[in-house]
Image 1 (cartoon, rainbow, N blue to C red):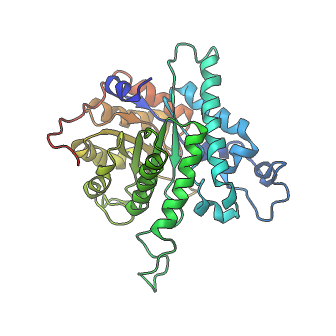
Image 2: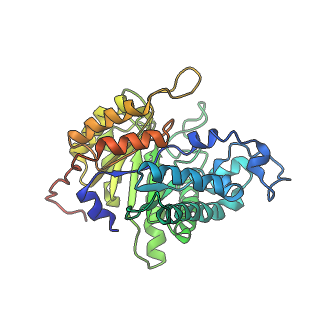
Length: 340
């Protein structure tokens, strides 16, 4: 299927939270380690991306649950699969392998689902290679006493992303999703890495989806940009879609999605959290509540791709898919000037 043509016909559904689902399996240190890493010298519990190697059947099962709920786009389990993020577990050397394995988990889940009775009648689904924001930022100093200090350089970030992109492409993804962006300069390094990777390899570029994060009521990213400034900063990448995810629940995200729908020249996406976390860090918003709010966005013509982030489950995705299926997708604006 051509995703561009599908987006012109209907609102597509992206899946929900991976971490929320993994928590339901109550995995322990030994589960994360598996046989291969049973003697690893640091604790690895919490390294969810590692599960694509040690517990691939769990990751594939989660993907299949989202497919059964109606997801058209499945995100790979690679939010932290870079050398920079994996350094927390001293697993930098696994970055490429993690991306390949996670992409294959998603692809296997789609093929298995489509071959099942439950998947009959479905025309297919796309694998989006998830490229997370990193645990180090190019725009902000981690040292309050030295605002000019940076824990990482642009070249280091671009190199880390390039390795991730190579793994995702080799694993067979259909799209590249640069997501949960709180620092636009990190995102620019990811965009640079994508463009350079395909140029150097003389191969057709995969579509890019870009999703930022508005962190508070001010309507700005963590690195201080307004939504319009953020979009202007990444517009040159000519993404398939631009959108928002994480940080806010659907109620809080609404004005920003409305604004984005008015300025974006490409398709728009939105996958909010299941409300805001409670005092225990849990998400209480019920599937029908999230779906009702997102359906209002669809009815008003704000969105082309919708789904869920932290706290959402297959039940949330099913409700969202059911609620928006009768609404037409947001029409692309007529762009008078071309990007050079």
